[in-house]
Image: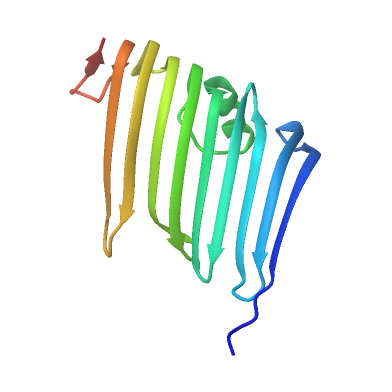
Length: 177
């Protein structure tokens, strides 16, 4: 006789006032499988400034996977949230819009891999030191970070078809137009 399993799947429309995010109305789904203890959580329609976010988490035994998708989220709104949530970032200012697909999986507290794909539109960023500046930059980027036994590997690609960027990397300055 096999193990008995109960599947609980609930969907809800949530109306809440959230710290730093304000009043939110979004959908959420929780799926719990009693036999295995597997849990899936999905939150859709979370507002970040003028854009939206979808968050997904799945847990199986010690393994987990997570994802976040951002659509048309303004850069200045993301910078403001990072500041409110005390996320350490360099002192930069920025405008423009971001679409992001972020995926990760791991075991325990450490990710085994992280992947991302992003599109940035009309990006204008700068820092006080003048080592970073862009104007009307449109770019697409993607990458993967993977944990190995004794090190991390990473790969990334960046493609831009319009705008300008300036990054000073010490004696190896870089200018893209």
